[in-house]
Image (tube, rainbow, N blue to C red; front, top):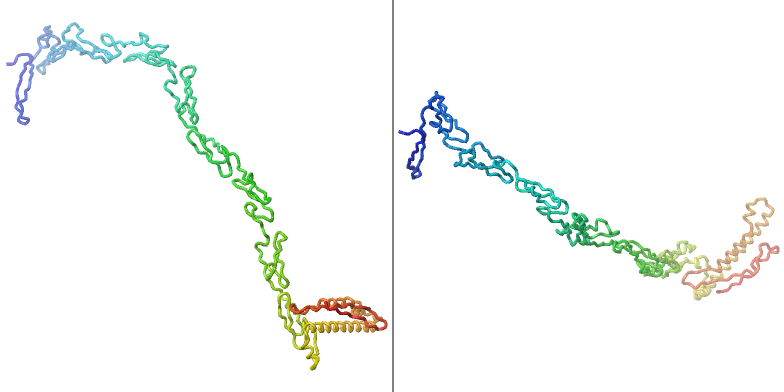
Length: 467
């Protein structure tokens, strides 16, 4: 039979699955079915004397309403930390050996103190911060807010702004008077507050007529053709070397020059003489005249054209009379006369007779024949002139006093002067072909009158001379 209160049992179970023996501990609490009669002061019978027993008639059982700091079904366990007396998240430790109401201990978190950890620790009470720093207390200790120019956990050290070598690339650091700020004097080619940036010289476009090339801490100007100088600011004057020859004038250009040559020279530097006859070919024995700026062909007789390439056809004027055939020759022509006609132009009609005269003419030298022919021509022309003059005189007498001006003008013999002179001039310059020896006759009138009252011959004497 079980006694009132807790009863303990230990049992062993053989587990066939795990093939092991399991020990089990079982505690059974035996209580009376009811509390003591109501109003009884006996508190230690069912609830260990630390609580109030309450009977539930409908359940035929009871329960214990334990006093403070007691727990358990029968209020049999003491718990001093039941009401969490420790503050600020402190830990409560139950002290089983104490029964005076102080049966616990509070373990405070950092920064708190007191029996219940109810007070913060003020780490700034001792004024740990120096040099006018501000102390701020916290759970882990304190923090000093240092004024400018000081550092350290208690602001005990003075700040040197150049101590950390803030200026880069060999820059020089200089501390400001306040001991806080600093300035950097950068070496060539660098810029920025800490001399950390390369100077971009090309951003300023320093090259006037060229391309800027950055070389790290410097730059170089690559000049356009025709310019020079550190900044490509100077134009090259190619005329300084006097490149033009033969009095040529040099004109400076960008990246070059131009020679303005005199009329008789040519070439890049006026070095070539410009012969006006260099590109002119005169044909058929013609010669180039280079007297002017432009060469001119001077043609030999019988040719014409810019290059003397045109043969003058003297037969175009039909010089051969009486069906004579004209044969063009260089610088002349030859007439092949029909039977019975002679002369340079087949203008003389010969009356050929058989016998000695014809034979003499046939065997006569050509030079003598030309003389005879010339004399016959002169005689023929003189007879023609005399005939015209005679007719003119007769007509003048016949129509003298006539009122018809047309006939008077027609028979005006004063025009004979010019006609006679022209006829004589034609005889002076008679020509009988290119290959024949020229026969020239000088005919000089000794006496000449337009009107002869005693009918004397107009031409008294004609003298001929073989030139």
